[in-house]
Image (cartoon, rainbow, N blue to C red):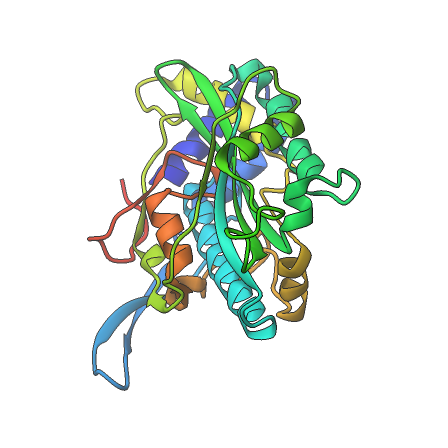
Length: 319
Ligand SMILES: [Zn+2]
């Protein structure tokens, strides 16, 4: 399993410097055993009589670099975002519409990954905080953002970026005081990023479809990422050490405005500590959010290992 491959890398690192990297041994011990114990049970749908296999119990290590646990946490997060969007619709009927943003920066080498993650998270704050008083902050009544870091094997560089859902006023597209076109989004993000180049920004809407669909997110499959290379232990270990260090204590997801209020009203638990057995995979997720997750391949955390697969059933990742 991919979790085992990450654990094996941590053990190798620990063997090199047992004292310095003692914390990696602890993490490896937990990750090595992660999801060893999985209990599936057949659940019968009382209406249709259909029998589905579902996860009933498991032991998860919860480590940020564990592909299995990161996948489960993503399921929790996306089900929560869907629930929040519904809550806002119910309590502010007709007031807001969602737009979906992806904000990027230039790829960076390993030595600059830590400072790049700091920069991108601070830039988001600059753009969306009251003190900045920028148009995106004035227009968005609520937001959700997720940090994603991908690895480019060919160039040996990292690509930190942010995916966000913004709830904007219903007249956003027709009111010039509120509307932010693509060029203006690039300018806002460039300013926030304090960049000397135009960063790539993707902004989209998903029309209409707020009807619930049975969560296709439950059909995500887990694959090892390019940062995990079974033919290159030295490279893998360097990247594992880098990610283990640089992702520590980072806030991978955050909520603001009316979405934060909804989260409090719904008493949602942080995905980092939430139940990973009974995740949102059974929940119905809003159609518009699903389209965004699927088409734009939204992930949370370190990726390259989760890909949308429509034709596989829920099952633990295997070799
Ligand atoms: Zn795990």
